Length: 445
Image 1 (tube, rainbow, N blue to C red):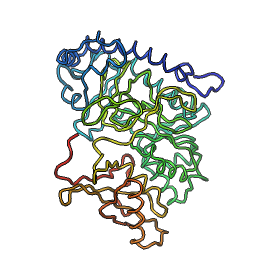
Image 2 (cartoon, rainbow, N blue to C red):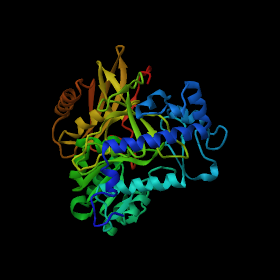
Image 3 (cartoon, helix red, strand yellow):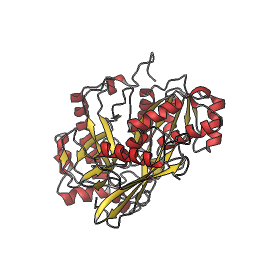
């Protein structure tokens, strides 16, 4: 733990110069590529087939010579040769923890950790908690699923800060509100959807989150909402608390990136992850600052190294020094490649629609997007909820929604459907399903 309540968990690491950071990245990259080649059946085969070898890494840019891998690679190699599969680079006896993906885009995939992997994972989580202001005098509620979910153990990182930690898990809303009322925690971590819905439920039960609860900071992850200004500010207004977004992958570890107080992107742990951005279709490597698909290479994870893992997440990285003084790059995530759709030659992400809807007064903020084919072209429609106290007629709401989305995205929805407050079945205690794709022929990713 830092001495004298420094703003940094590890000042030397967090403020290291870009030159020194990249020097260390190169040292670690050379080691992990050789380690993967020597210990993982998959990487030996993949590198040999691609005609590359560990000695080809002379500069960081040389990673571009090596082949990509993705979720399909994980699924295809899982369980082959051993329980942990061909990607694993250690014997099972060296593995102390596994998590699994949600399986939302296919068969759930296992993510194994050695003790060293796990300890460094939690050291990074402590760094993020400290970065958003968690301190020993805080009471923290970890309201995340513990069942096989990689974010479950992150509570250990919170404990490393000295905070009093309450392992809430997926408590029913009524029970969680009881905890918030009676234990008076100051920090909570959950999904953006649930943070919003829990605040709404509190109000409906006569509890004002601003006045009757003691939450000062809300950490959100699992959905994009925390990085959408309109959504984040709506949650902050509802709770009277600061909201910070965390970003993680089951493939690597819980939270790999987190906001600082300036909320200008999410600092990514570049001591653990080498970041590339590539064209989603061609795989061409793009310059830093360009929008594309994130490709991550783990630099220190030994149970299952990931060399050039295509995340499927679209965004860009800013490697300039942040106002907070931290030098690790900040990623700006726009959405999932699989979720993007094209209407009248305009790339549309559900996050764009969410931002537009959450900016309109008189709506609850709940929404659903329907994507469909009409006259041989892609169209989209949206459904929204009107607040109970909103006395506008539906035609006026439809016009406002349509014009707002046209101004923000560049293309209007084909139609807008208005529901009464609570009329949309999008409220969930965890991740919410908001996109329905009815197209027969989707674009290949």
